[in-house]
Length: 181
Image (cartoon, rainbow, N blue to C red; front, side):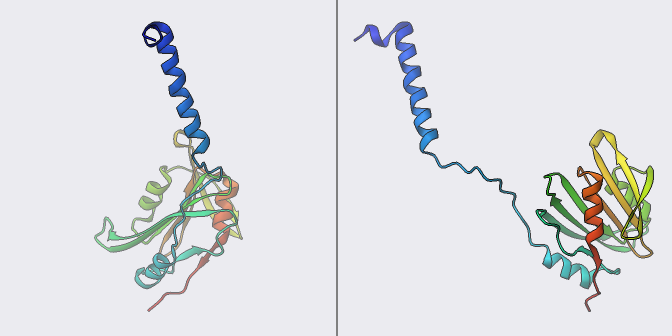
């Protein structure tokens, strides 16, 4: 018996016992084969934005099929001119499982907000979405595409690693919400 616990054969036997234990563990442990992306409910942020923002808020209505809202964040701050601002960022996992983000703010200068959200200050043409012109921007090193729309009282940016067709689809769902008092 002593020979079996020493040397190469003892080592090989111990390894086989360990591997068999791991194999049994993997067989009996439940494993999920379905994808799970945590989802958030952004309705409270929409209500707060409609009440607090100086501009009319834009929301995706409806949320696109197979898109999952993954983050929602409303922030109050001050812009470079010292004015109070309200900004909202709403993130999605798209149907193709890329990332898309809707960002909107009344920050001034508007170009500063758009440049930060798009990680680029260089327009590369434009695209028409539901008869509205959006500025296109692309940052190759981050694989980030952006659609930017400057409104009189706010700036909208649809950005992410999603392809142009998905970003355009998100922009197409945006509906202006009435202000809450």
